[in-house]
Amino acid sequence: MKSMEAEIITIGTELLLGELVDTNTRTIAHALRDIGLDLYRTSTIGDNAERIAGAIRESISRAQVVITTGGLGPTVDDVTREGVALAFGVTTEFHPESWEQIQERFARFGRTPTENNRRQAYLPRGATAIENPIGTAPGFMMVEEERVVIALPGVPAEMQHLLESFVLPFLLQRLKLRSTIKTRLLRTSGMGESWLDDHIGDLEHLSNPTVGLAAHPGRVDIRITAKAATPEAAEEMIEQVSSTIRDRLGDVIYGIDDESLEKVALGSVTKHGWRLAVLESGTGGVIAAAFSDHGSGFAGGQVLPHADVDLDLENALLDLQTELSAEVGLALALKVEGERHIIDVILRTPDGEEHLERSYGGPPTYAPKWALSLAANLIRRRLS
Image (tube, rainbow, N blue to C red; front, side, top):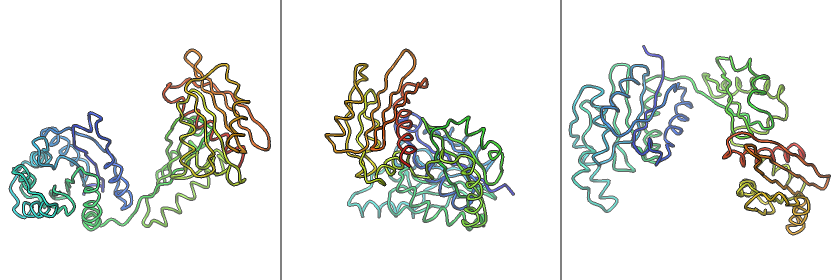
């Protein structure tokens, strides 16, 4: 018996060309995690039946469950049906029931299907059709001994509906899954990935829960993942590791899961009953835009298109705070010196003023985001 593993294959040349962003993998991955099914690989294949068949053969040689999305439409380049048939060494055959459902769906939409829509009713011989009540592309699955390949539409809403209404209940029953996988993110800022690894590297060798790092400009996420019989047991395992990490890192951690650094920073302003004004130069408006998404504590900002070496940040910030009646002022100038970026920051509050100057030598496109992290973390730590 294979170990209970799954793989996801997203299908579509538009994905390979970068014309469409794949959101289906994330949705399916989260769903499989919640039912305790391990996902070890994902891949993307273009609209080519032979390559789709090859990818499926490779996946089912390793995993019990393979879920594909995309390529179930009516056009010539929608060849997932043919690819799955090739993988299993069968032909496609017409499913009258699926064709009736497709016609009914079109009638409900006040439309008439064209002849090429009949292609959607041709499924690999031996496949079980999965009715799609909210779209015109039926899904299907092929079951062979320990293996199952489930083909879902690529339209995210249709895919998610079939995933939740059919696929997950089917997998829970077929695999007799009795566990769940839970994940927590600890969000950090102010220290780099190597510093964090030095402080919690021993925990990264754990097998359950597992601990891993993911770096972003000026921030690092610590991911804790646990597999257990119940959600409560998984959460308890995560909490034990999380508590250890918090003891070691202290206020380097600013939040968990979906908490953003900007929201936490602005919250530290509003808890004093204050508002924040932002003056930025050379950042393209990244700073003000980030804070403007998080409530009434943001008084407003002024964005200068280029970093002016003669700009008097202190006086310009004072003028803006006065104009906007903002107790807290943040000024940030991003300047280029050779291959480096120099970031000047001023934070002014009713309790005083702080200046920072930092050098950034990473990819230029990340410089504004790195500057944002620096500024937001300064606000958070100064006002917490």
